[in-house]
Image (cartoon, rainbow, N blue to C red):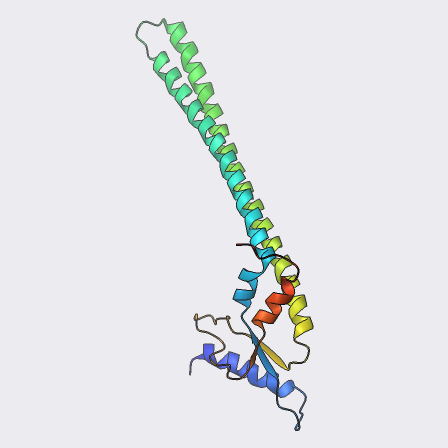
Length: 193
């Protein structure tokens, strides 16, 4: 028996066993498509637009720095070429080689700065995205809590197991609350494309 299927089933059996026994009332079960709720929530689209704006700004800043780096690299190559001219005196050649070596050190520092900038911006955007997502999920969960009080069990029908198999294979006559949750979340807000 595959343990990946055993433990979720065991969890459901134990959860059902922990519910109060009511012989006169059937178990009330509902489903929600959390993937659809999250993607169709207007605030999700607003948050994605902000993150995409931050990514575009970071890319523009990085592109500017890379262009500056390439120009500095071109300048260094020109210094190297100038230092190897045969008409130079030994002193002029040494001066130009020192200038070239100094430019190489600047390039190495600048390259480290550009890489550090890129890593920092990527981390900042990732953290901003995580905070935004967590905030949206909290808001969605608050609405779900209010709308599902009369149900004994509520399942996410878009959820998948570790093996990429739907956790909820069949929901029969269970109420689907997806549209109700979306309506509550997007109440009073125009739909954004």
